[in-house]
Image (tube, rainbow, N blue to C red; front, side, top):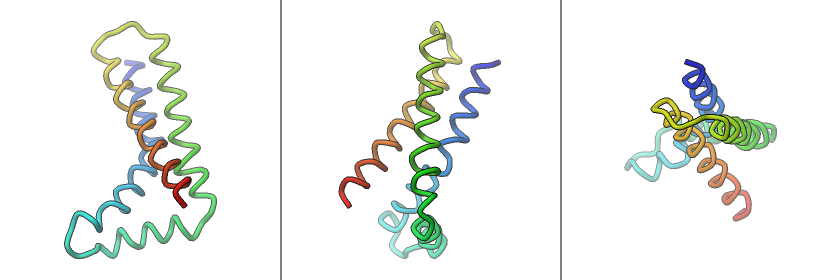
Amino acid sequence: MRIHIVAAIELALIFPAALFLAAVIAPNLISQPAPAAHGLVMWYAARMWTLWVLLLALPLTALVIGCATLKRLRPDPGTLYVAVATLAAAGMLAIVILHMLAN
């Protein structure tokens, strides 16, 4: 049961970054840009703390928690949830850092 709680915490930590990345990608996937997606991107852009907290610190925290949990666990079906959430956190963190370096 504890493993599912860790996975849920990780998903909660990466949700703001996932929401932002979805809002950034959404206009490229649909023909008409969604005003809500643009508004969300502008909200993040207007506040400097969102970059550091919501896009870097929370996914990094999820990555550290996931790695520490996976290191202590022996393989079982519940471990897959933590592994997927950890990989998602690492992927989002990599995208954000690459985007920051490109600008």
